[in-house]
Image (tube, rainbow, N blue to C red; front, side, top):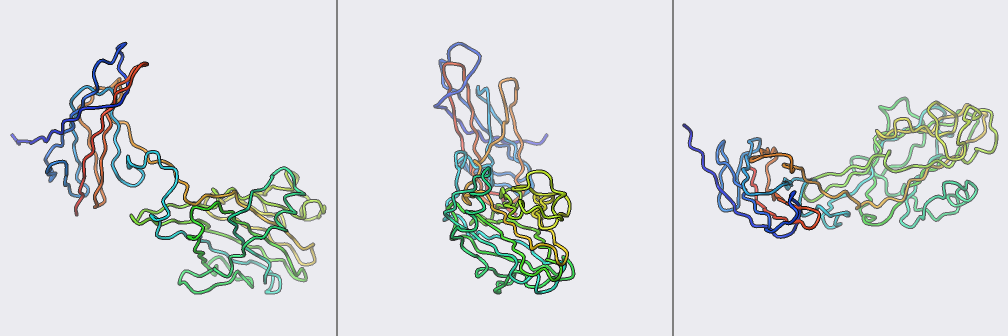
Amino acid sequence: MKKIKYYIFFLLGMASLASCSDELTENVSMNVGVQTENGVTVQGDVVTVKAGNPVVFNFSGDPDNISFWSGEEGSAYANKDRLVLNPDDVVSSKLHFKLWAQYGKPASAKDVLHMYISDHFQGLAGNDFKADSVLVESFDWTDFEPELTDVNGNKATLPQAPVANANKATEYMVDIKKYFGSPITFAICYKGLDNTVNQSRMNFSEFYIENIMKSGAKTTLYAGDFGFTPINMMCHHDLDDQRSMTANREYGTVTNNTNGIWNFVNINNGAFFIQSSPALKELKYSWIVSNVLVMNACSPDKGQTVKNMSQNIDSFTYTYNTPGEYKATFIGTNSNYKKETRVLRELTIKVVE
């Protein structure tokens, strides 16, 4: 019979949580053991394992509840209360998007689109169109076109002429790390300048912000999470090619191709557009403005429940698939309505190739 060694780490608790008795007279205790098989070795409180091999943790003691943080990205106990990222932990923060003009001629696409950013915009009212339309026009936005680059880092400009199809779209990047930690707002303005030919449709895709951390982890915020609100500047002009839009003409979007109105059907995937208009139709004018975004905001890391009061569990298996060093944390708790006791145990997990 195969002989299996167990390394036991004895833990005595402090804090609090509950059992079913009226009084908790003793602190919770918990032992955590690591089973040394399948290439798992233990030295002190350091566990070494090959990537992809399971680690079996064995429990003894009297905890009613056990929770586990693996130490991987998104599951680090040290970050359980973290609501913001430390700017020093961020290597880069960039806005990415693809954009192409469709229909018309260079005269109808040139300088039609402008893109802005601000770190002091206070937000739209959302229920006062007159005030909001005046605000977006008069606000001291920062035009970030001078900071646009293509994927190779070369300076780029917004579309100045229509192209044949989406395969001809330019892929843009904007470095926004200097705004990291500040409340920022994005705004996009479409204002037609020439209607002797078709006014161009502007198509965005793969619109997202990507933050890259020192750890190599990435966080992504897609356009659907920006909270873009249109300001349809022509909504009170009773244009014949916008009459099909009957609801929320001031702040709304459409699911069809209404001339000069934004379509957000695929915005959760980072894609949206403003529809073109035929030649000789009224020049179109519209904005979209994001919510105020705090780029270093984040959700707290989360653990997982291994055991609750209704379960009798004495082992737990977890597999680390990526080489690296992780701090695995187990929390054992007992509680009732009067008192809670808690014990914490941390192990260093070294995952090797």
